[in-house]
Amino acid sequence: MYSPRRHFCISYPSPKKLSDVVKLPLLRLKSREEVAKIWAEHFRTKTLSVAASTGHDAFERLASNAQVAPHFVVPLPRGEGGASFETFFIQFQGSRTCLITSLHEYTQNPDRPSPFLVVTFFDELGEEKNLTLVQGDILRGECLSKEEAGHVLSLLLLFYSDPNLSRWVLDFNLKPREFSFELFQDEQRRGFNLLLQVPPSLENSGE
Image (tube, rainbow, N blue to C red; front, side):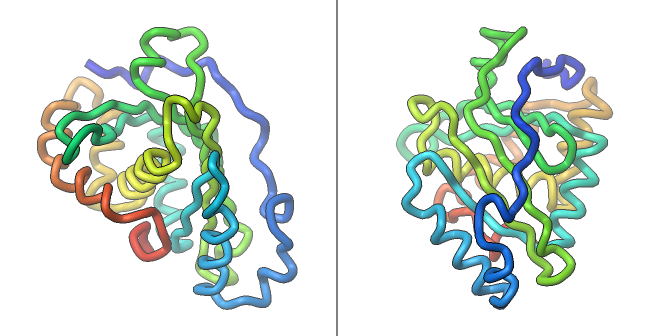
């Protein structure tokens, strides 16, 4: 059984501001679609970074769920055709920073698990352009490739912002005795594999 009551003992520096990453005044001159494309292109060639963008309403749902349900598990398809899975553990620190590690790492080093991926949400353009920008920093490149980090980020955005799927997140945190990981994985198996074909972007991470 997976218990969200068992907390990580890992931390990460305070979230960066968007102005620390890009020239925000110039970005404000662009359209919503242009900003999303510029953001994706900025990280496209960075080996240890992934990026995504999502609508402001989707981020508001994600942030609300993260406050009451900061932990979750997602299975990343591995192998040919996604025949097997590796489970990753998610921990939000507030609503704008998220730490992700493998469940294996978490169980092997329960007192100080090492994060594989750190996700930061930038909502400075939320109300102005209905856009939240997302950055993922890969800290363990030998354990998680750029492509795999993109898939994990897609799953994070999907399950925390989609009203129909966030029930799994809420049950995991608020009704842990009723949460069945096997049922969750079986019901969502097809969706996990489909996400392998679609990178995280404005289009697939919600409006």
